[in-house]
Length: 199
Ligand code: IMP
Image: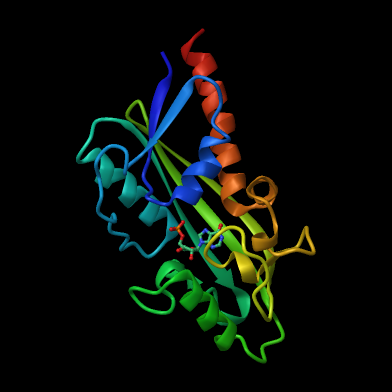
């Protein structure tokens, strides 16, 4: 019997990225698929707290195996901002474009443009909690380039590349991205977990 995992997200981009990586023996649904339509509150001060909060929210309503991720973009010259507030950097109902424009304008004239994306994943599996992390170093460009991806992708240039995340295919991005790395760690764990269970 495959193990079903519920991904605590409404973000179709993320769900596609992850569904493509899942090993044999697992199926995935999102919270949208199981009837949770509201946005899950994220009130923690850290990525760890927020990803755990999302998992706890789902578990308080459904009995399931569940995972959640939380990501922040940390800009060195801004003391780590927008960080845990990346989704609402330009205000409560900010669009991705609003956030990108705000960051570009805050960084106007700043020379040190180094930044990193970090992701923390919390997984609740058979009643146990596991945590996985991933990050990618890079810099904030001075203007937006590319039309793929989402969020800050058009202005994030990873150190490994001369193209922004928004100029990469989903697969290319996933091989070096914060979330790709954190999920790769979770996928490795899941592969071994399933093998151990079936021994
Ligand atoms: P979340 O915790 O994954 O929802 O991410 C918070 C915010 O960080 C999102 O609303 C995006 O603005 C940004 N973000 C997260 N992941 C990415 C990514 O892969 N590329 C660009 N921006 C991202």
